[in-house]
Image (tube, rainbow, N blue to C red; front, side, top):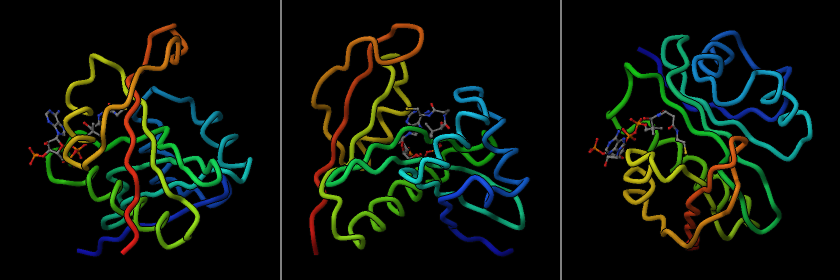
Length: 149
Ligand SMILES: CC(C)(COP(=O)(O)OP(=O)(O)OC[C@H]1O[C@@H](n2cnc3c(N)ncnc32)[C@H](O)[C@@H]1OP(=O)(O)O)[C@@H](O)C(=O)NCCC(=O)NCCS
């Protein structure tokens, strides 16, 4: 079995396996996902195992900070540490770029599983963002200050 993390910065780089994974969650239409990547400010991390994409993470670069706007793992790969690995890969890349000092994340107050994930990644709940989601719901905001080694 071959397994790897890959990093994409252009919509033209998306493979059918990654598109299938993005389309499996109806949070963002594929077009919005591609439009975001086309701005050049976003990076997509994906885990590929034997040609199958088991999870993706999309992060936007905000200068000295980055915001994880999308994290999804395929149901059959859940609770195996995959989302945590995607977050760590994103953190490692941010540190190695040398600019990113803080990582932010927003999550729905009723998404307890995701909140547990962010806490196990040592993120801290720092506040609420009003009317963050398209349906008008508020978001909880998590932050991690990246420590330089
Ligand atoms: C949230 C999500 C990304 C977690 O992915 P995952 O690959 O299962 O997460 P991991 O296996 O890396 O979880 C690591 C730890 O986070 C916590 N955690 C993750 N999902 C959890 C859940 N549903 N309930 C409780 N704790 C959870 C646990 O502490 C877990 O460690 P453990 O399995 O040893 O107890 C996945 O459930 C998902 O894609 N959900 C739908 C999309 C979504 O809600 N995205 C987040 C939007 S902000």
